[in-house]
Length: 193
Image (cartoon, rainbow, N blue to C red; front, top):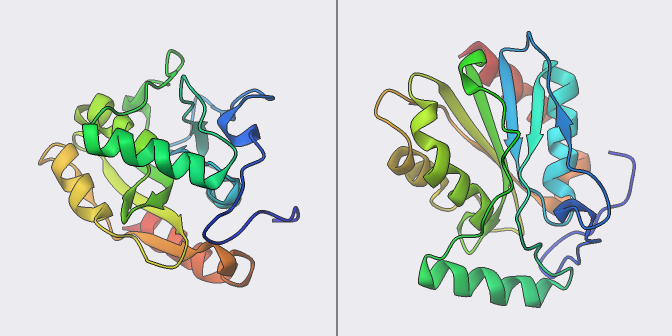
C-alpha cells in the first residue's frame, strides 16, 4: 500500500474506484481456486484486495455500479441511506462476471456503511448469492471505526445453507498500513479453513 489513501469518516473518493476514469480491476486466470469480489469507494478496500490477490495468488473482480457514487462523502452517505431505506439497491455492471464454479473460496471485500456491507456488495449477494452454494465464503471489510456490523448475518441470510461462512476480518481504515501482518495471517487461516 504505497499510495496515500483518504481515511476515516468523511473520506473523499477520487472517483476512480467507482470507475469514472479508469477500467474496473479484472485479474482472472483459468486455474485460480480463490476469487476476491470487491467494491471500493475511496480505495481502502481496493488496497486490501490488491494485497490479498498477490498474497494468495487469487483472481479478483471489482464490482462496478451503473451510476457511480459521488466523490463527496456526505453526498455518498445521503444516496446510500436512501437506497437502504427503500431497499432500492444499485444496479451492478456484471456482464463479465466469471463462472464461479471454478472457485472453492470466495472472498468478499467491501466497506462497511451504517454497520452493514456497502450497498453494492449487498446487491451482489442478492443477485448472485445462490451461486455461492457449496462454497467457502469470507468477508473482509474496511470501516470508519465501528467494526463489521451485521456482515456475518447478511452473508448467512443471502447465501444458501450449503455455503460455509468463515470468520470475517474488519479493519478501521486508519490502521491499514499498520495491520498488514494481521491481514495476511487472516488470509492464511481463511485459505486453510
